[in-house]
Image 1 (cartoon, one colour):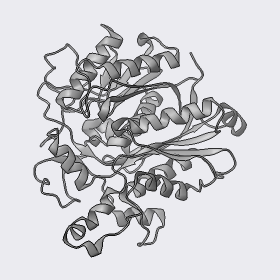
Image 2 (tube, one colour; image 1 turned 180 degrees about the horizontal axis):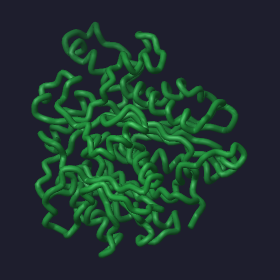
Image 3 (spheres, helix red, strand yellow; image 1 turned 180 degrees about the vertical axis):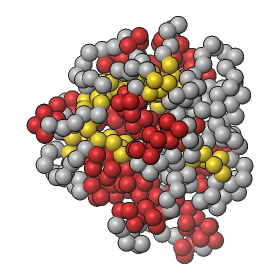
Image 4 (tube, helix red, strand yellow; image 1 turned 45 degrees about the vertical axis):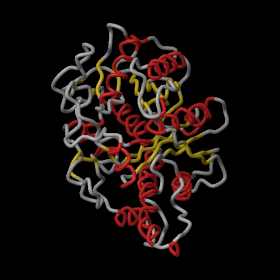
Length: 400
C-alpha cells in the first residue's frame, strides 16, 4: 500500500450544520437539511426542495469580520468560513511557515452577484458593468486572502460535481511529489437562480425529499455548502507533532466521454476511477469497508453508479450509502463535503443511513444502508461523478 497523505484539519458549512461538530451531530440524528426555498426569490420556490444554509450573507460577513461593501460572492463567503475552520482545526498559527497552497473548486462561482444586475442589463445598455466577483477564480482568491496565502500556489478547479474530489487529488499529488508541504483543498458553491433554472431545464430536480438508489427516485435536491481539508506532508507532521485525522490513501480520475450531462449507463467512468484509486492505494476491492456513494437520486446517476459498483466489487459489495439526502447535491463542493463525512466515519466507526430509501431498483440487487450502523472501519471509498463524464474516486484510511 502506498503511503497516504495526512489530513490534519477539516472545516465545513452546509444545510445540516455550520461546522464539523454540527454536521456530524445531524448525520447521527438522521436530520435532513432539505426544505422549501426561503432565501431566493425564484419562480420555482414552491415546486422544488433544496438544502439552504441558515446564515444570510450579512451574518457570514460578520463571522469573517468584513465590511458591508466587500465584493464577496456568497460562494466566497461560505468557502472562507469553512477554510478558516479547517486551518483552526489543524492548529496552524503561521500559514507562511511552510510551503502552503490552496486548491479550491466551484461551479457556481459568483453567479449570485451577476444575477443582481441581470434585469438592469436587459433593460438598459447603460447598466453594463464588469462584475469582479463573477468568475470562478475570484472566490478562490478571496479565500486565499482570508487565509493569508499570497505567495504560493493558489488555483481553481471546475470539473462540475467532481471538482472538490479533483482538488483533493491534486493537493495529495503535490505533497507526494514534494512540490508543497501543506495544501488546503476543497470547494464551495452557493445556490443561485442560474443553478436552479439550469437543473430545472434538465428535468432532474425533485419536488420532494430525494431518495438515492430507490426505484421510485424522482431527482435530486440542490444544496449549497463549502468544505476544506488541510493536507500535510509526512515531514511537517513529524516536525510539528501534528494530530492526524486520517489519510488520503488513493485517488483516481477518468472520463467516459459519454454525454454532456449523463453518465454511461454501464458506469464506465466510475468503474475506471474506482479501479485507479484502488491501484494508487495498493488495495483490493475487499479491503474497502464502506462506500460513500455519489448517489444523487437521479435516474441516470444511480443506475450508472450502481452498475459500476457491481463491476468493481462483484458479489462482495461493502455497505454503501449516499449522504446527499441530508445536504442536497452541493455540486462542486460535494467531494469535499463527503470527504469530511468519510473521515468522520473512520474516526467514529460509523456508517450513515441512506435516508428515504424504500424500494430497491429493479436493475440490480443493491440495497444501501438504511440505519445508522457501527462497524470497525479502516478504509472508506468516496465517489464524485460529474457532468461531462468526469468521474473521481477518493479512498481515505486510518493508517498511512
